[in-house]
Length: 80
Image 1 (cartoon, rainbow, N blue to C red):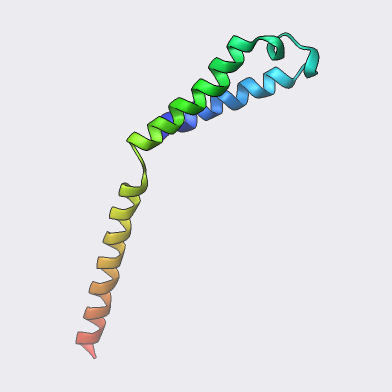
Image 2 (image 1 turned 90 degrees about the horizontal axis):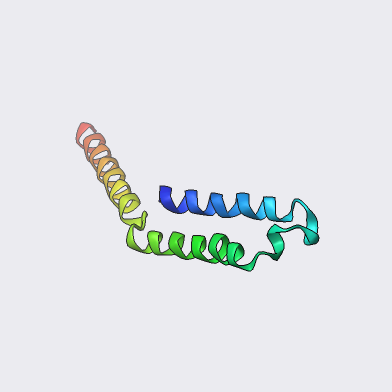
């Protein structure tokens, strides 16, 4: 996930610099740089998220939380 965030951040920095001089600047007219820093960065970020999706990590954390809550409820029922 860190790789994806970093790639998107690089893309955003490029876009800010690209449009800092308006539509007449040299960066906005360089198509190869645009494809590399716009399309490729997003494509690699998406593939990175497909391969290393953060969902399973959060699902494990959610299961642990549910297990802890269930134990707490059982303990409170036993005490009453």
